Image 1 (cartoon, helix red, strand yellow):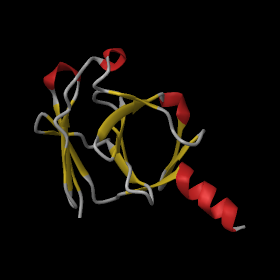
Image 2 (cartoon, rainbow, N blue to C red; image 1 turned 180 degrees about the horizontal axis):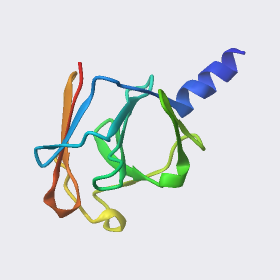
Image 3 (cartoon, helix red, strand yellow; image 1 turned 180 degrees about the vertical axis):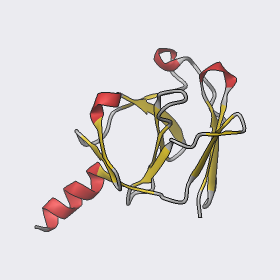
Length: 121
């Protein structure tokens, strides 16, 4: 049972309901933000840029959309660990995300020079 809980907690993110997401200062009302117990943040921009981002430590990565399943208050990874492509690599556009991460806010650059900002309480 303990093993199941540990495995599940490494595959699941809980939605942060009070999170606000901005792309270049414009509110992304349909975006969703999730956090897991290890502190990783999953950002689903939904309508806007149609991209998922995972902030893992000092890395901003892009997972394969088919690797994530969302059920309202949770998001689940289909494999552990969730594989992401670091945005700094050629494969993801060679972007310097200039990640800024604090207890209630994070921001980073994405392809096209857009800034993604996430605020939560």
